[in-house]
Amino acid sequence: TQLLEQSPQFLSIQEGENLTVYCNSSSVFSSLQWYRQEPGEGPVLLVTVVTGGEVKKLKRLTFQFGDARKDSSLHITAAQPGDTGLYLCAGGWGNKLVFGAGTILRVKS
Amino acid sequence: GAVVSQHPSRVICKSGTSVKIECRSLDFQATTMFWYRQFPKQSLMLMATSNEGSKATYEQGVEKDKFLINHASLTLSTLTVTSAHPEDSSFYICSARVGLTEAFFGQGTRLTVV
Image (cartoon, rainbow over all chains, first blue to last red; front, side, top):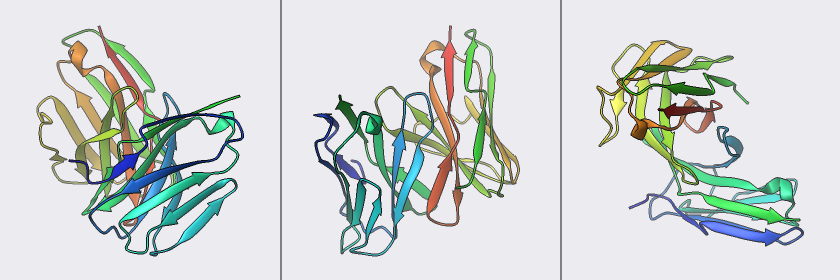
């Protein structure tokens, strides 16, 4: 059983469309991180959310941390082909970092 | 963000040989580093937690004698895949945590065992 349930697993959309990726858990996390990974490279940190209810924006990306700090979402507005990649949510668990299963996003031009 | 350098990025080795992968934190000291394995189009699977100056902590199902981890200094951890077999072929990634929240990743190593 995954500690962090991430959905959807795969998403294929047209350029210009909006999308949301969800990361849910039954456990409370002190913080959650979102990463983006391209094939053959390591994950790159996009954002860390710490406070329940927090919303952070990174250009066309909007990240939200649930009030109870059990879930988070990533919303992309007007997706571009350059947004294509594997998106991972992660949360601290003890001294480890646990990951969701990931969302493969493909944006077609 | 903090920089973690992983080397080599790609390696091909013969079955039965050993391969060493290095992970360095370039601009900070990392008391703890993590090693992950990743299969195509899947998420990262934690293999072990590497602590400077002490033995690594392995996740369930990971063979400690096959995947030797050494954290020799605050900036260097190594993963040695011993007696490699084709089923060990994978993408291996290291990371180091900064504080208690964020982790920064190396570029990954594509290991192919032939």
